[in-house]
Image (cartoon, rainbow, N blue to C red; front, side):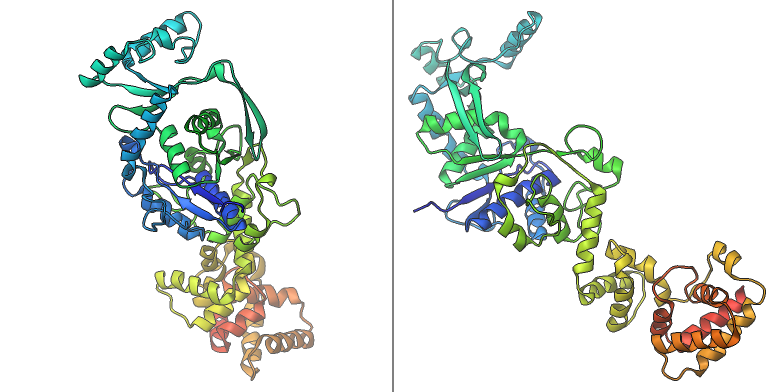
Length: 498
C-alpha cells in the first residue's frame, strides 16, 4: 500500500511571509489535497536571535486568509508535534551524537578567529577556503586530536560544533521532480555544521530529523534550497533513513530587470509583496485583493496547466495541479496582471456579496443607503471596477447630487439655449407616471423627435447635470435609480448654478 502523502511548509518566524513563501505553501497545499494527503505547518525557530514577535501569528493568519489552512501545526496539534522547533530542541543532540558514533560526523573546536585566519590566508593565495576532506586533518577537531584531548576539551566546556563528514571522491546522483537528475561531486562539498555546543541544531540537522519523524513524503521548497539537496540526501543516507522526494520551485523574479522579487521592488513599483500588511508595508488583503485572486495568480507563477485557462478556483487548482508542470526557470511577477485577476474575480462575485462589501465602505464615509439600492448600484457599475474600493468613484453620484461640474464638459456641453432645453426636460420628466428606465428613455427620445432636436443637444448636457461629469452607466438607468424628484431637482440646481 502506498504511504500517505505528507508535505510541510516550514517557514522561519523572522518577519512577514513573503509572497514567494506563500506560493511555496500553496503548492504544498495543492499537492497534498490532490493526493489525499496532509499539509503540515512547522515553525523553524531554532535561530532565536532572528525571531520576530508576531511573525508566527502572521503566517497562520495569511494561510487562513488565502483559504489554504494547514492540517497539523502549532495550535492544531496532530500526532507528530510539537510543531515549533524550539520546543523540539532536546531531540536533536542525540541524532548528532549518533552520527559521531558512526564516524559520519565529528567534533570541531576551531575558533571563529582561527577559521577567519584560514580564510584570509586562502584568499591571499587566490583560493577559497572550504572546511572538508582536503584540510580537516590539519584543523582542530576530533579527527586530528586524540580521544583524550577531545574529552578534555568537552569536559572543560570549550565551545565546539559537530560537523558532518562529507564523503570523498563520490558522485552523487540526485533526483528532483521538477529538475530531473542532478549530479554532484562530493569533493566540492564542505563539512557543514550540524550542531552547536549551546544545544541548538543548525537548520540542516533539525530539518532532516523533523522531516523524518513527521513522516514527510515530499519536500516542496524554493530553489534557494537546491544547494542543500546534496547534504540533505547524504544525511538521510547516514542515518539509514528513506529520503522523501524533493521538488525545488523556481524563483519569483522582479517585474523589470534581473533578479529575485524583493520588498524593495514592491515599494518602488507601488505594489504589495506580502499577503497581509506588515508595519508600513501594505498587504494584498488591505490593498483590496480577493484571496481567490491572490491564490489564482500565485498558482500560475511558475506552474502552467497546459491549457489556455487562466481563471481557477481553489478546487479547480487542486484537480489540475501537478509538480511535473512546474517550470524550471524563474517566473516574472506582473503586478498589472495581478490586478486583472482581481478584476476577473470581482466580476464573478454576486451583487449581494459586493453590495455588502461596498456598504462597509459607504459606512466609513458616513453614507447610508438601503442594501437593495446598493445592490442595484453595484450591478450597474461593477464591470468598470478592479477593486471594491473603486466603487465610490464610479458611483458617488448615486448617493449624492453633484456639487460641482466637470469644467471641460461644461465648456463643451453647456451652450446657449441649453438651460431652456433642460427646463423643458423637467416638464417632460414630470409627466412620466411609471418612472423606470425604459419608459424614461422612450418618452425623452419621442420628445427629442417631436422637437426636431439633435440628441447631442439634449443627452450630453442631461448626463452632465445628473452626474456632474460625462461618466457612468446608461443615463436612464441612473435616473430610474435616483428617482423622479431627485432627477428634476438636479436639473434645476444645475440650471441655477451654470
